[in-house]
Amino acid sequence: MNNAEQLTISTPGRICLFGEHQDYLGLPVIAAAISLRLQISGTPRKDLHFNIDLPDIGGRDSFWGDQRLLYNKARDYFRSGFNILWDEGMRFSHGWDFEVHGNIPINSGTSSSSAMMVSWINFLLHACGHARAGDADYVARLAHRAEVLEFDEPGGMMDQFSTSYGHVIFLDFSNHDIQQFAPRLGTFVLGDSQQPKDTMKILANTKNIALEAVELISKTYPKFNLRQTSSGEIENELSALPPRHREVLNANLIDRDLLREGLRVLQKDPVDRKQFGNLLSRHHEQLSRYKQVSTPKIERMLDAALAAGALGGKINGSGGGGCMFAYAPDAPEAVAEAIRGEGGLAYIVEIADGTKTITAE
Image (cartoon, rainbow, N blue to C red; front, side, top):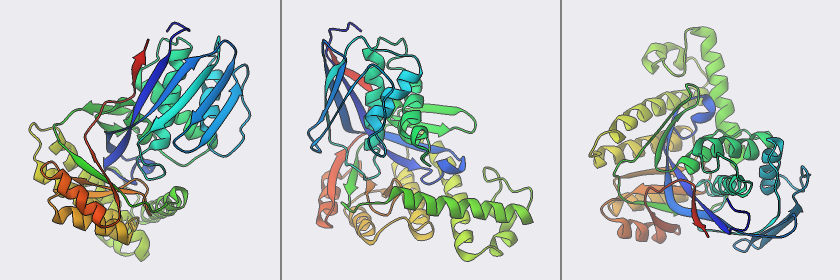
């Protein structure tokens, strides 16, 4: 791009349709970008100063873009994004004044931080005139490095890829299989419980138990394969596991199979909306009852949404608070009001584009 141009990059939030708490086990996920977005706008400067204004949260940051940066705090994402590009050999001829705005719920499981990182990486690629600016795969991989690997976090790659690519995306990183498609689904209602969640604690708990269960069962059934083995094949071995490990492992096997069924449903045109909604609710049952990542308030919000006409729904993200969503192609307003009646914030959303330039003039 011309260095004198102003620029705005917009990136969506995301919901996980199938495969919640599965990607860190090497299993596939199906996620969807939603029409709540974060955008970063920039105006070029004459010096190498980078000023970042975050009026939505009352935050600011600034640095000089002439060297790799030191971190001032945990998850110092603007600096880590800059550093990853610096490590790739990218340099800037001038600085920028940035302003960040968004309507994605923060710390609620809808990937607000990944939307910010994807926007930031995409912006910086455009700003230095990189040939792969806007390349969804390249942007996602750099964003994952900057958000997760740079800080040695335990998260997977779903958030960066789903927000970068947009629409509905099937991700199987163990096979390097990425499929993007655009089923005609209609509306969802995202419900924010406004309950803070501890993502790292929830992830560590569910992930560690699942991995321990796999290790235990592999000792008595050496042919066990998390991607292939059915629960019927290991019925005796499952029953011998400690109760909590048995519940979590069996839930993962069920969720694995629900994803496969969900993929078949989503690939049909038209989508069987009732079947799709039912699969979402069956996935939620495993997350809530066995993986125990839901909360009483989220359960009430889901129950109210279903009573108001939603065809299905589930908790979204790591859990322990945060958001749920209901699939409501026929009655979104009534479902949104039902969620509000249980004390949640409600957003009517649709499937959306991935990261993109919305102004460049």
